[in-house]
Image 1 (cartoon, rainbow, N blue to C red):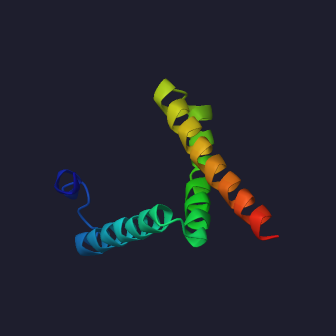
Image 2: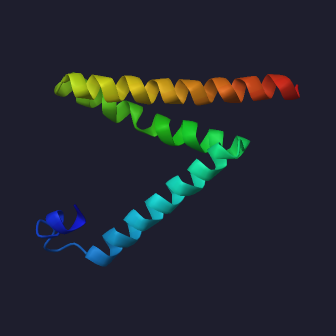
Length: 95
């Protein structure tokens, strides 16, 4: 996919874009490891990183409503909600 869109980015620094993509993937892998290992910081990271997309998904649904867009929105909100619930349960156990 990277090579497919490389022709469209004539003036862009492709090495920078590749480095950012690798960093993004590394961050997601670290988050996945933390969630798998049941670390609280990973739940915070997952909830916050998932919640960042919600306003963009709402905007997309308002301007170009599709079944796929609505499904992605609902899936993302359910994941963020589940992680928020897990954080709330963890906090209640500690207090």
